[in-house]
Amino acid sequence: MDQEPRLDRARVRAHEETGPGFYWLQLELPADYPETLPGQYLNLKTNEHGFKFRRPFGVVEFRREPQAVLIELYYAVVGSGTEAMSRWRPGDDVDCLGPLGVGYSVDKAQPALLVAGGRGAAPLLYLYRLLKESGHASIQFAFGVRDEELLFGMDRLQETDVLLASDNGSVGFHGNILQAIETERPSWLLGQPVIYACGPEALLAATGGFAKRHALQAQVSMEGVYGCGLGLCRGCAVPLVDEERFLMQCLEGPVLDAHRVDWEKVPHV
Ligand SMILES: Cc1cc2nc3c(=O)[nH]c(=O)nc-3n(C[C@H](O)[C@H](O)[C@H](O)COP(=O)(O)OP(=O)(O)OC[C@H]3O[C@@H](n4cnc5c(N)ncnc54)[C@H](O)[C@@H]3O)c2cc1C
Ligand code: FES
Image (cartoon, rainbow, N blue to C red; front, side):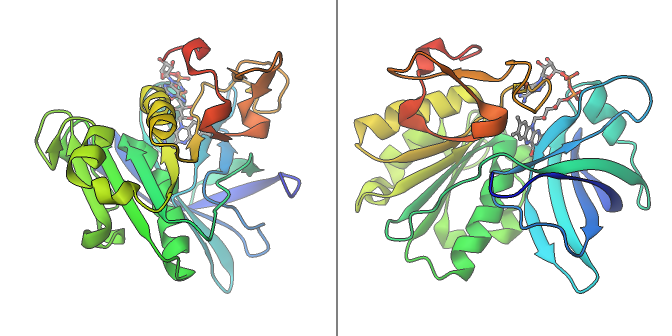
């Protein structure tokens, strides 16, 4: 973390349900809000009344405006915290701690291969926009979903940069997104691209194996279940290859070098 996180009252500017249980949320923060990078996250208080841990969310977009900073999030309702969020209305105030964690570290010299699984596309849409604006030489966006209706943010991507896959064959390649790359875009693996991935842990683990097989660097954004978000509860511990200690992903991640993670010991994978 380069800067200290701070506590703010963010204001809901817009909030839209884009599919059953999936929401775009626009938050307005003070104009001096620190730069928040793709992969970093905000810890939001979702239930204002009663004890509840904050909930972590990656950033889909960060824009500095003359009077405010606009941050966009995309989230799915999976439990009580996100259910409470879904009732937020424009004008509501939200208790926001951030920016937190370590985001992607872009290798400017190498092609970028972004690998997204489901709502894991959130921080990668932001990374894609920054890479495009910086004139990065080669950017490919591989996006896998369970079903076509779970695609989002497609209007922010250039069609020629995108490869789609779906588990049920409703859109793009029928299968997972890593199989899709190997089958339909093997050329994307030439020139030593760096993989930037985000999605369910099973996809991240598979990405770790994929990167190893193809001798590529890979940065994965982990999405553990966070308790404190402060490095205290050890609920987000990640086992490492050849290291005795566990890494606390809420502090040292969520973006990690895929080759450092001992995927066989990661819970849930
Ligand atoms: C760094 C980071 C960035 C994230 N970014 C996003 C994002 O951009 N959009 C988004 O929709 N979600 C994101 N998440 C996940 C989000 O934080 C959880 O879905 C949320 O905290 C669940 O809160 P809840 O109170 O609704 O669910 P809970 O009541 O806490 O849990 C309900 C169910 O969801 C499961 N669950 C909780 N957290 C997760 C998780 N992280 N992954 C998978 N299952 C989980 C629980 O095991 C339980 O089964 C991110 C998580 C992390 C760690
Ligand atoms: S969430 Fe508590 S240590 Fe990371």
